[in-house]
View 1: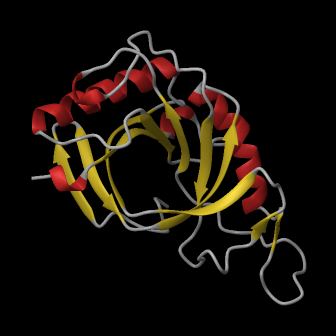
View 2: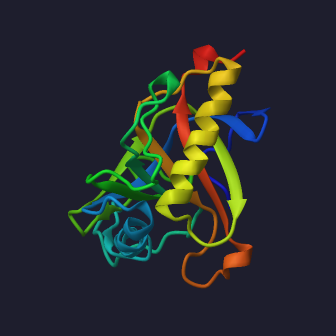
Length: 205
């Protein structure tokens, strides 16, 4: 299932880059003290999975046991790629190494929930929040979770294409990595990954 909380309401292709629009949806999110987005994904997955699989407090009367929620896709990682500046003010580092910052890891929560009905996390490092309506530009590829070098390369390709098309990148340094698979049992050749950046919807033609 791809973003069951909010399937894209717009899709457009620019060369190898797909541009999409998403309506608001909920995520369960944790912040990991790890600048490598690949390493952070493993550390953050356990915390978010714990919430989804019952480490939560239902909002029904009387509470009761933790509610087991449907496993959804994608697993989201959001971090900063810092370094040399490119056109369109997109900071990248040609070596592919990430800056010494934190990474946010999250699961998309199914559309049957809203902020009032979603169970409360027991782990205080996990929070439930709404992702606002947004446009993003992404490249897709199969294989194992991408290395930091691959993430930088994909981001550079996205930004180059957007620059040529006159589309503005939003949120400066923020880069997203999505994994549309079970990170524990899915073999590498069946995994689908995406690297994405937010874009300014008003700059789309």
